[in-house]
Every structure is written in structure tokens, then in C-alpha cells.
Image 1: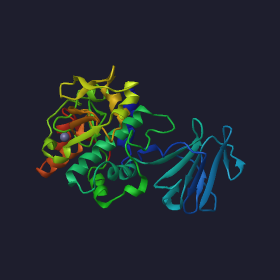
Image 2 (image 1 turned 180 degrees about the horizontal axis):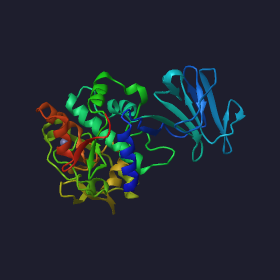
Image 3 (image 1 turned 30 degrees about the horizontal axis):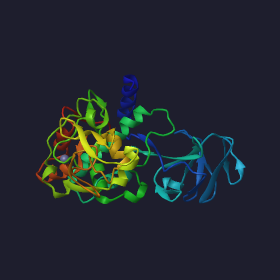
Image 4 (image 1 turned 120 degrees about the horizontal axis):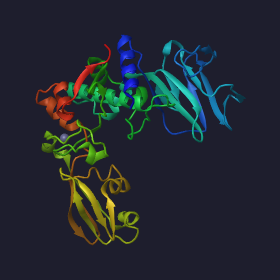
Length: 360
Ligand SMILES: [Zn+2]
């Protein structure tokens, strides 16, 4: 990341108190046809100060032929088109309701859809998807700051690209207006503009559902050797939901072992006890790709042991859900229930960092 760019962006944000810090979020995979609907649509070029021309209607259909963008059967003389509803009202794009503008542009193969919206509005579409809305307010506030920080970090990393983040679990789950909720809105507004920094830069604010008792270092979980992603103890170990059992059938392991899977053994562990490598039949496999092959929802974490082996498969017993690095959501809930505020929660999971207000 370029320090000058960070400094310029942060200075720019600080100077505009009303901070229109915008995000560009890819909505769904590329598609052949895009239907945009909203009240009294207008369109313009894909720049922040574009002049918008009213189309005098509430829906339009965009397609791609060759590299050209087509609107209702006529080629457009632009590479990308930005659409907006009257009075910045909501838009519906291919079934997803969003705030802000929608940009449609040729993607790698088909059409890409990008939602351009203020960072604070983006968080409303993220927070309810990433953490249960019933969690205590201080936990939701910690999550809001982490999600804001994560987004800003990605924006700096992807500066100048068509979009900064996707909308799936690989980025942060973004469900547009569907995820909006009074409690999450309160958490976002109460922490408006606040981010977690290390040496004045937004950190890589990773988070996960539950660590099972000890968070994992950034290096061991994600290959990110960062001073603030250290392993810390977590109270979520006391929760019954932190413990799981999974039965794995031999046929599930065949794609991993490349043949008949006759055995499953743990080969190595990280300092926090998470599995690093497994022996599957005759093959030694990296544990991260082992979890990916079995499915992230099925093998919930790498903190497991092979508890027993039977003729029809193996029983794995484990703790936690997710990669384990950074903020633990269920642990945050327990810390909030014990009276900690969001600042203390963030300090706990991102040790050595500082909370800063970019704008108010
Ligand atoms: Zn935890």
C-alpha cells in the first residue's frame, strides 16, 4: 500500500466533514443482462461529479454485445453507465435492493454490476449479514468499526479499480437494503467515521464467528504476518455452540486423496493447536485447502482432532467457526455481556492498535 496515497485519502476525508467516503461494491457475479429499476431514473458517466440525464422512466435493461454496452437495443457511446433514482431513492438491480448509484460496465466475460454508495450506507448492508442483530450493542459497535476498517483498507488496496469489494463471504457479506435494521443502524451511527489503525493506517480488520478459545495469528490463519493479528485468549470457549462434531464419510475424502481414502490423520499443528497438515490416504494435504475441499460450512474450523475411526468414516471433534484471526464475534458478545465497551473489545482482538475518527 502506498503511504502517500493513504495520507492523501485520509487527509481528504478529514477535510470534508460531511465525508462522502464512497465504496464500490460488486453485486453478484457477472450476468448477461442487467435490469435496473427505481423511481424516475437518470443516468450519467461513471464519475463522482457526472451530469445525470433524466430518462423519464422507472426501469431499463442493459446488455453487452462484443465489448459495447447496449441500452434497450441501442449501443451506448460510453464504457460504463451510472444510474440513479430520483432524490437518491432506492434502486433494484437484478433483484437486489440498494442505496446509492448502480454502475453497469463490461466485465471479464459478461456485464459487471457495481453499487457505488457512501461507506456508512454500505455498512448498513453488511452489519446485519455479518453478525446476529440480537447481539449486545457494544459487540455490534465493535463489528461496525471492524467492517468499516476492513472496507477502507480494501478500498486503498484496490484504489482505481472498477470495484473495491465483492458482496460474498469472501469479502464481507453485503445484502443491500435487505440487511438494514434499527439496532445495526444505531451501532453504525454511534461509531460513525471510526476505524482501527496501526501506525495511522487502517488495519486489515479480519473477523470470524467463533475462535473456540484462542484466536489464531494472522500468519497461521491467513498468511498475513501482522503485529496486531496475534493470538489472544477468548471467552467463547465457554459457549456450547463453540464445540462441534462432524462425521466424514470415505467418499467425501476421495477427491482429496485422489483415490480410496484409507486413513485420515493430523500431521501438524500451529501453536494454538489448529491443524496445519493432514494425511488423507497416501496424500499429505495443506489443512486450509482440506477445509476448502470439504466445505467451510461443513468443516467449521481447523481446531479439530480425529476423535474416532469407524468402517464408515471418521468422527472429527472441534472448536470454533471460521479462520480464527482477528475479532471473534461470539467472544465479542461475551465481553459485551461482561460489561466491556466496543473500544475494549477492539483492543482485545487487535492488540496494540488505536481507534481513530476519520470524520464525524
Ligand atoms: Zn472466541
